Structure formats: structure tokens, C-alpha cells
Length: 122
Image 1 (spheres, rainbow, N blue to C red):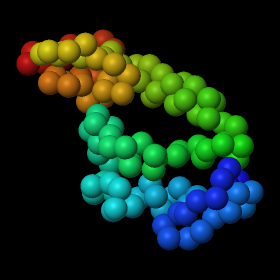
Image 2 (image 1 turned 120 degrees about the horizontal axis):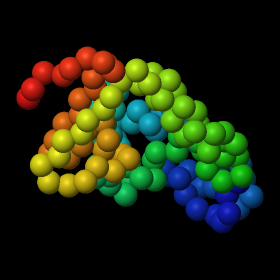
Image 3 (image 1 turned 135 degrees about the vertical axis):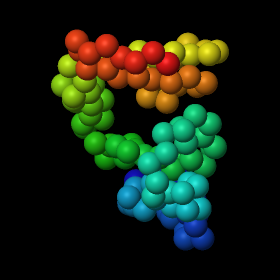
């Protein structure tokens, strides 16, 4: 619901009117994202203000999806199930890893090896 009178893309919106946001469309907008249909984890490293405002995976405000917190826990659990038979190793040349770059660490690499299997030397 609009908190104040304003304009969205040339359309006047009055205070109290309901506004629906097509997240599927803005998450794939060429006006906001380079190569919007490609899976590109590095795009999250340096977001523009437009990109921060345009990424709404769980909606916004009162209509926000109640699964917001649950989804992250579910992804963690799924990751554990998929990777439970693997050992991970991250080698970095400069910085320590953090959550958003774990699978694509800055200036380094990640290797997954099945438990009990000796990895080849780099």
C-alpha cells in the first residue's frame, strides 16, 4: 500500500492505493541487470543502488513472504544434504572468505572432494 502520493514509471499513485510489484519481471530486467537471464554469482559482489532496490526475492512490507527466514535455513540444510559426503577446501590469495563469496571466493578457488578420495595436487 502506498504510504504517500508519488509516481512510479510515469504513473501517479495515491496514498493508500495498493501497488503490486512484478518481482519475476524486475529480477530479469535488462534495464537493471547485465545478462539478466544468466546465472552469474559475481553480480552480487558490487551491486548498484538500482540493483539493491530491484531485488526483492521475498517481497516487501506487509505482504512480505513469511518464509523469508525459513528459506535461508532450508538452503543451508539442503546444502548440507548435498555436500555431506564431500570435504571442501578454499584457498585464497588475498582475503578471507565470507558467505556471499564462498562458492566464488575472491582471487582464489574452491575444491570439493569426496570423503575418502585423495585430491590431486594443484
